[in-house]
Amino acid sequence: MPTTAKKAAPAKKKAAPVATAISLHGFEPYKEKKGEEYMNEKQRDHFKGLLLAWKRELMEEVDRTVSHMKDEASNFPDPADRATQEEEFSLELRTRDRERKLIKKIDSTIERIDQDDYGFCDQCGIEIGIRRLEARPTANLCVDCKTLDEIKERQITGG
Image (cartoon, rainbow, N blue to C red; front, side, top):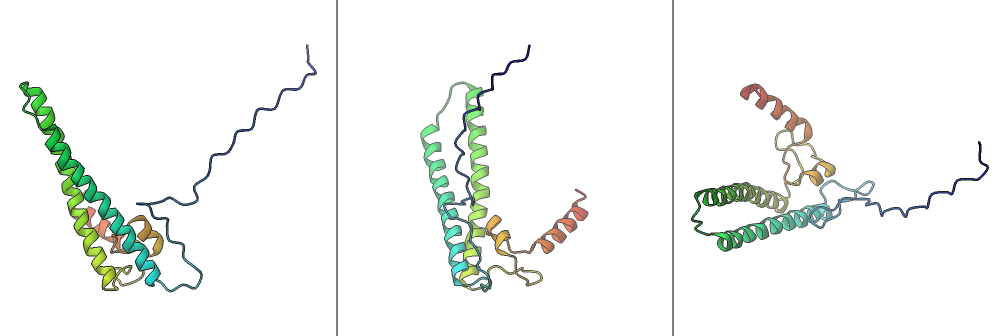
């Protein structure tokens, strides 16, 4: 038997605020202005600030790891507990080693900014591009040269 009652409209939900840009290390992506010169002082300052903030975060993580390892270091009587702790420390140290290498790369990138050599491909010399540098601030190759490098590496390693 058909009913003539109307269904109540579902309650409208408030839309969640939409992030227009993703913040990286507390920095909003650089917004290029029409006709703006590539890698001008404002852009270099933006990327230098981004890299310094990233380095600061990594250094804070190193400090946390050192204090964590000091606090948690115990001589467990159970060999399984000792092995677990040693494995955890080993993984943490491996991660910190990767971050140490990244800090070196960040330092060399900051040096390139200071020498006004940032944002250009090491192999072909063309602009790397603001969007690529936002995604990978330490990039020193354009997308095309990086792609060719990866293809060559796969051919050599057979991977």
